[in-house]
Image 1 (cartoon, helix red, strand yellow):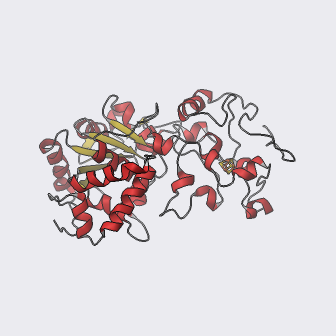
Image 2 (image 1 turned 30 degrees about the vertical axis):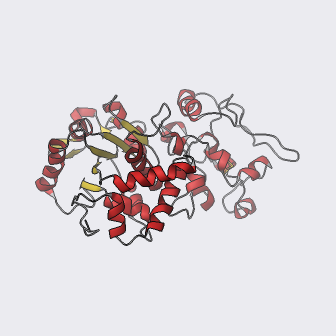
Image 3 (image 1 turned 135 degrees about the horizontal axis):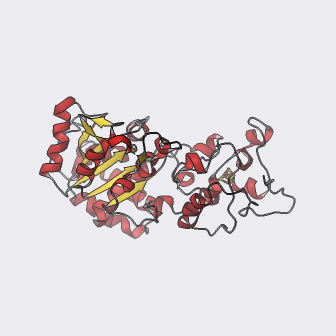
Length: 367
Ligand code: SF4
C-alpha cells in the first residue's frame, strides 16, 4: 500500500479503493467516480454500489500494454491531461508491468519483464494492444527486441485473461491498413480470432471508455456486451448523428457550406462539409474528451467515423459527403450500419436516406 504514483511498475496487494485513498482521494470522490463510470457503462444507477463494492475488493489487475504500428496517440490520450482525474488514477493504479512509453526499463530488461508476466501470470493479466500488426513478409515491418509484433501478440494476447484492442489501428488495422496497406497490417482479431477480445476503436480511444471496460471486467468478471465488430454497446451503440448538438440545424436544413462562413460561425450542421456522423457510432457527443470539455464536432470539424472499420478507405474523402446507404433510418443499429457501410464500399452514392425534410428546410443535395 501507499506506493508512489511514479512507481508504475510496482505491484502491491492493495485494492483499487485503498490505492485511491492512499493517493489522497476521498470516499466521496470514489463514490462520484463509481456513479460516473456506471453511467458511462449505461447501467442503471442501482449498479453503482456493485461497482463500488468491486473496486473496494479488487486488487490491481496486472496489465501489459503493447505498442505496434502506432503513433502512440492512444497512450498520449490516456496519459496526458491538464489535471489528473480519478479515472486517470485508476489507470495509474493498475499494475502496468510493461508499457514502452512510460516504463523506466529499456532493452532486454524491459522485454524480460513482459515475458515474466506471461510466464508467471498466464490467464491472469490484461493485455492492451495499441497499433496494427503487420503480417506481410513474415512480420518484419514491426519488430521489438528481435521479435515480430505477430509473435509478440500471439504469445502475450494468446495467454491473457482478456485483450483490449485499444484504438482503431489495434481494432481494425487503422491507417496502417489503409489501401494499399504495404505492410499487410491487420487488427488483433484478424491475427488471433477467438481470444477473449474487445475492440475499442477511436483515433484516439476515449480514456473514459477504456476505464469503463476495465471497471466492468473487475465488477462482473466479464467483458461488456459487444456488437458484431466486438465494440461495446455502451460506447458504440448509439449513432453520433442522433446525439449531436448540431442535429437541430441538420433537421432545419442549416448547413455549413464553406469553412468560416456564417453557418460555421453559428455552429450549424457540418453534413455538407463531409461529416460522417450519420453513419458513425460512438458516445463522443455525450462523454466528450479532455474531461468532458469538447469533441471534434463541437470544435467545428466533422466526424471522420474513426471508430468504423476501413474508415480511411470507405469513408474517404474526409470532406466529401457521407456515402449514403438506403434503408438506414434513425433506428438503425451499429451492427447494421457498421457492416453495411463496409459492404457498400465502392458502390455509387445514392440518395441520402437518413435525413428528414422539415418545413422550410433544405434537404442536403445528393451527389
Ligand atoms: Fe452533427 Fe454531423 Fe449529424 Fe450534422 S451531420 S447533425 S454535424 S453528426
